[in-house]
Length: 62
Image (cartoon, rainbow, N blue to C red):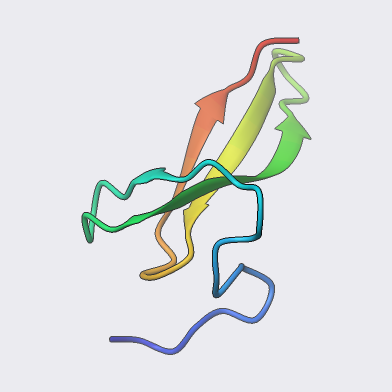
């Protein structure tokens, strides 16, 4: 397993509602950061797995 990335979570925070990770299958996929696309002005949330640290961007409702 590759080294953990320091600015991504290495554990599921208390009170988080994790989902199953699409890569490793563990219940550790959590919402992490928000960003707004400059071109479309849509809001996206980056989800990250606290175990394998895979990330995925999903559209967020405003």
